[in-house]
Image 1 (cartoon, rainbow, N blue to C red):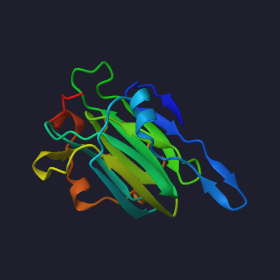
Image 2: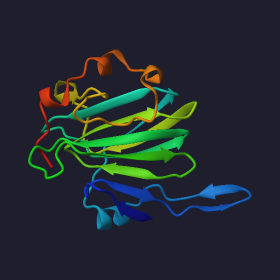
Image 3: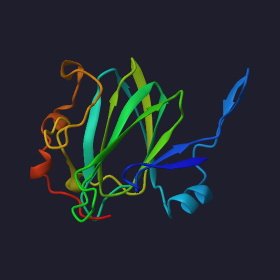
Length: 184
């Protein structure tokens, strides 16, 4: 596996070594010892999967302490633009974000530690998205930032009229009004 640091060093893109032939392909999507050597100790407690159609945007979500979540995300099928926003108030990259294209074709993964808001939008006709988390879902600590926040100015790569949001995601706070996560 190749571990690629981003503009925000705690966010890491992971490229697997894919072995393929005319029968198909094989790759290791997670190897704990390599992951911990490159990124640090992790104990994933749950893995989730969603299927969404073009234009579905999920996010920007986070959990407040003590239930912050680190995530290891990937698109198994289709293509998404994945975004992580630094919401650690004591961070030199506070309020900055990194976006990366994840697809079933490029097989990239994106590691997002606790202290980041996370979201993705589906760019292909459909996408199957998987993610591991290192903490349980805690609804009382669940929060988020509206996807089109003017202070963040995220380019979601789709026209506004194509974006499809859940009722919950339509009601998210502005970045400046959020109860931000100060944990690293």
